[in-house]
Image (tube, rainbow, N blue to C red; front, side, top):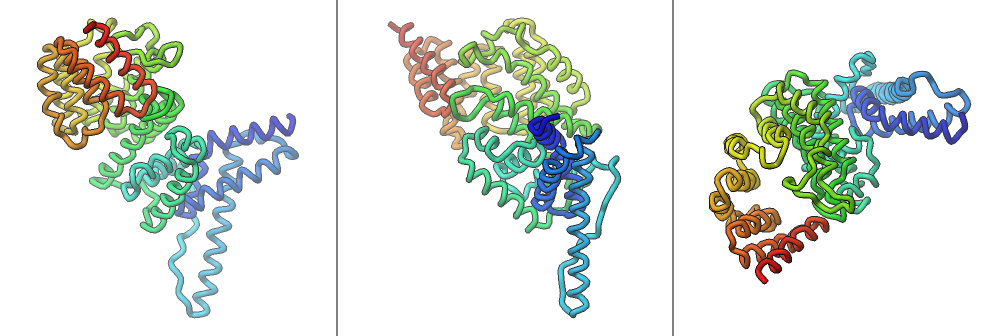
Length: 413
């Protein structure tokens, strides 16, 4: 194997195993920042040793063992230093004991790392960046490109997140009881937000970013494997699998958006639909589970005309009860318009026009524009669609909205 091939093997192995390595080391050093540095040290050691010694049979195990040895050495040096200071009559914060652990416990460490990276002490942006860095194995540059943010900004966000966790002395553990539910909600929220950004990009030239969707689904599947008794985890898995099944059909050959009514359902991924429906059977009654049930209504419809919009409207009503938000209510308006007619949907959408949270939300005027057009109120509809186009930061959505508005202008003429 050439030096180039060995390097590629090392980098591939590290990308695959980095989350587990960092998780295993964090248990020992109790600091995710230091754990990441030690994992990088193991990567450097592999780059130095494997070209001469050869690639080991289990690259991930080799990297994990190398990082653990460095972690243990670090903690032992701290302990020696602490003893020397104690002998000199000085005080030092307690140094955690060395915890080597068994290889069989590594999945538990990964679960602990997920709860640590998504701790509510961090802002949502910091949680997302840190999760993608530690658990997704993405570089700072990749995260910056995914979220269209300057790389230095993302780098600072990650550094500050690590410092915040250390300052708050966040324990490296899976919480229990009410605390677990609060922390689990944070974990699920981060995975959901990552997927959403991939499914419908906030800004930029692309409507979708499949790589982010794949990363979110991988994290959700890992979480379901580690917490098989949590119904809402399965609800999230079901939602992401079912939504992702439509990715290939959401854009045309040139990257332009394809609306749900116009999508070629033969392009929907049947395997993802099957996996999503299977996960839905293990889901509960929480917000992700209800959204998964809505996505299942679409997945089960062979044609757009077969969609059970009445059931979807009822489900959105249920979602408003467990996770009320103006965005959910806007979605309910769309479902009502399909089940009972555009006037019913517009009545609900009109009640949202004064909601501050939706003041700059482009989908509100977009929905109102569509409903007004269906009611024959062309001038009002065109104005709303143009307003929606001005609000969106996604170039593909802007083009679609302006094309709709232009079409109404032609219709009027």
